[in-house]
Length: 237
Image (cartoon, rainbow, N blue to C red; front, side, top):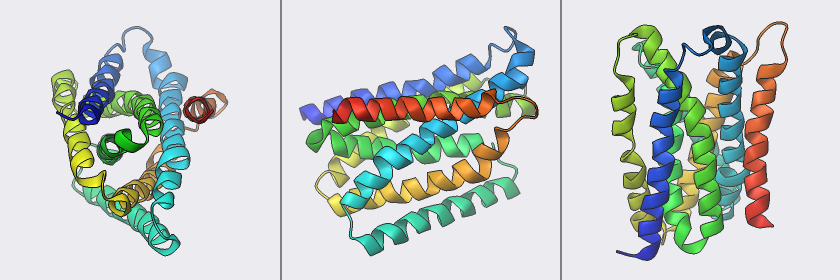
């Protein structure tokens, strides 16, 4: 097996394991239930939104735009936003698992595919992308699990999230084999995902952050983006 592919599968697996980790944390409600329902839960949502925004601003859009002419880049970015909006409305109309679960998978899969393609030619950006995926997956899985528990408190959520882990290396393998030698396709996947994730941030994540009489939750978003920025600066500097 190609060394870069083995490395991509390993990193994508580590990124995928952050989903059951977030789900496991969501089940420790007995520690501080009031905190989880108020500032803490909103802060976790904001942190995930900040990490998502870091992925869009620091990796997906700039790396995607570098591989595409201007007009297709803008078109695919808009198409990503419209497509994610349509998916969001479809799931909401059918009373699906909720925005947090959709956000988690719809950004994780294209990012894992990009991770597999980037590691051969640009390992620094690939590692940065893995770190940002972990930062965003933990709070997204935390909130997705909480959504599921609100609907069905007895649901066995942890085994369900563990079953999602292999999707990461599968997407990385496809990205490595199909996108590594196709920069236009890789750029298209990245910038399409960037547009879709930005829609989810403004439509579903940011509105859940605000609480009256407290400024702590929005700072979670700043912290999430700051950690993504720190990783970006460390890799580029």
